[in-house]
Image 1 (cartoon, rainbow, N blue to C red):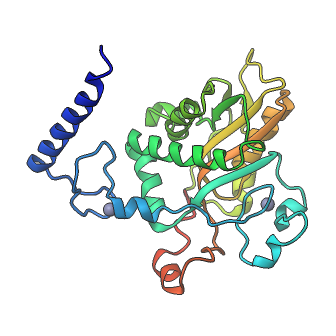
Image 2: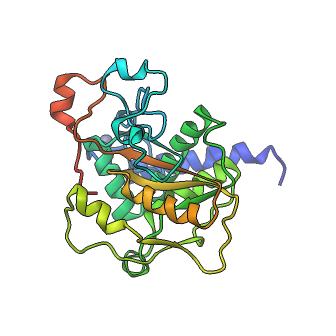
Length: 277
Ligand SMILES: [Zn+2]
Ligand SMILES: [Zn+2]
């Protein structure tokens, strides 16, 4: 095909999308406002622009944003948990906070497999990686695995819907077959902090015959809540010989943080989000 035809195809698709939106005006899947233009991403511009990145700075290790600007001025700014060396991963970073809009977006990906949203999240995580190219450099992208029973029930792994397009953007292989969850998640919906840690202890393993020695791994998940999941996966990977494990999540849930750029009204309206996901 000649290169000249490519833009023409793009225009044709836009025209088709516009006609489709006139015939079937679709609501935004988050706020239900009618979408102005048809797009593969069923979320309006306002909702997307409210999914903001953390303004930074945060803990050098786990990325947790600092509430106080003073902490960021420390020589090696680490949060309380990282000062106690709690986590088994080398670094973790998240794109943004778990606001009410973010909760709904993550639920859309998790329960409705809205793959264009996985692509959008992947683009945001690629920006995070581009912001710290040296410390976030990797050889492979690995999604946090679901237990096989859960995978059969859901039909897909939401972390993989983010990890695959992210790997494509970074020019890295996505190796979802490397890891397996061997211990199912407890049936109870809401877990306490302690139960979360207990439920993932020893829950992940490297598949038989999978080789991870000397690999630098970007471990991808949708939400970081306590960090227990990334910690458990990272320990399994490091034990099997991985050189470095960096956790990357779209959102980070924190009950006590709403971001320095947020007003009190925004905090009251958007809150810390549902911490059960
Ligand atoms: Zn919307
Ligand atoms: Zn930390």
